[in-house]
Length: 278
Image 1: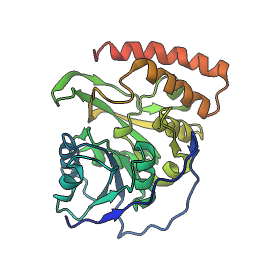
Image 2: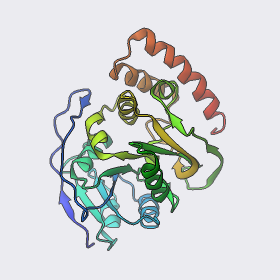
Image 3: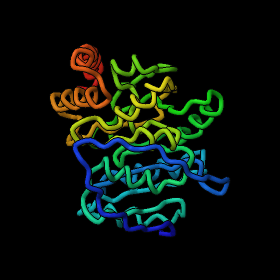
Image 4: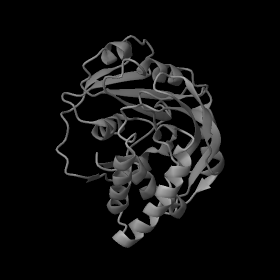
């Protein structure tokens, strides 16, 4: 592989939750506009599809940072087999988990924008191009898309997640429609609001932090993300997912009464959503 292979630092010692801090950095025209962050652990079965979908993008000014979290399979070898110099492989020295692995990618990212793609998901070829265009038109700092779905074996599921054109903080609290693998987010905002916590939906906490500043999330109601419904994902257990959602509300500062109010919205909207995905 012509891209960089970097030994990532040992996982930082984190408490239950971690709040990131804002960071100023210098960017120039020789750097990629978009840094794609992909954490990977034992992803040999799916990561090729994910990487190929990045390589197929009609928007080409990107870098792809793959953070291999001490996989025991051929994940690293698969990533290393790509010769595109825009792909960089970072190797964790010990297993850190997805939140910290993404943080390692975030710290290594050179782009003005960050996009996240899980190693078992995929994009349509026009995903980044359409998001960059909307960012220029609106000045938005957080852009997300609708989703198509596939099962664990990669077979399409006949349902699409629709999203609104704008999603303010109060509406986002009712239901997280911002799929992590669909986002394009301003790098400075992402760093400022980055959150770590395996017992919460850390991506949801980031989007809530950004929108709480009065920055609405902008949606593209097209299935530019193909989301894999993996059987072993941490959000596949509905009770566990609900507990993580509660922890997210508490993390962003909601008191128990307000958190309970929005949990009612979460339960109702989740039931409506997952009836399509049984």
